[in-house]
Length: 282
Image (cartoon, rainbow, N blue to C red; front, side):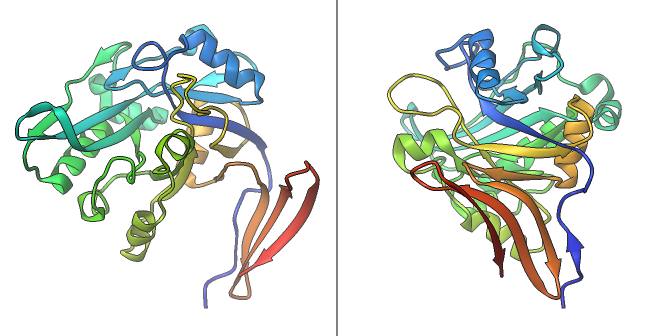
């Protein structure tokens, strides 16, 4: 029988964040200040600008009592057709978020510098997909980051090309932007495979917002972190420890394993805005 356990720490506050977003520093429409204001006005407490292959750090500009920035980037490895780079067949997008103080100290001089760009790995015709994912993830870890494998369904990768990757902190199983763009933003099968293989890897929801206006891609997927304070260190420590949940609406207040059964305490809203408490047993 599974050992009894409580899901979240009893102490702390809940902090809401989007860890996957883009601005005019890569292919987004909003400037960083506009994007930060959008999420802050919608009740978010932290935000990561994950520009494509470009590390940014806006903590000095935007951090305040009730809102902080998590520095990071979205790194790429790309498989193109044999006839050139204009035809992208598959892509690994692995998110690097600046880690804890201990992780930064371990990386030393390798910690990313503000506005440091990295060169994507590009293959033509064929590639070692699993090897490319592993190398990219190890590289981001060596630079002091925790890592997330982003939108595997949208990336058109086979499970074997990412499920064996070591040092992943999480897999993005809900991507609000690509759900609305192409119906390719929801994918739990790869994550389930990793868990069944014994990998301890978490699941996250995010927006991947570019704010282009063709479809809604902001404030739809997020994580809620239980932490004592709204600081980079507290948020990252509790993310790494799994003291958080992912959502696109429902609020989860507790989960636990009791007498071999899982119990979730949550609050959900219906289409008319009415809310109700629910206890779900598995």
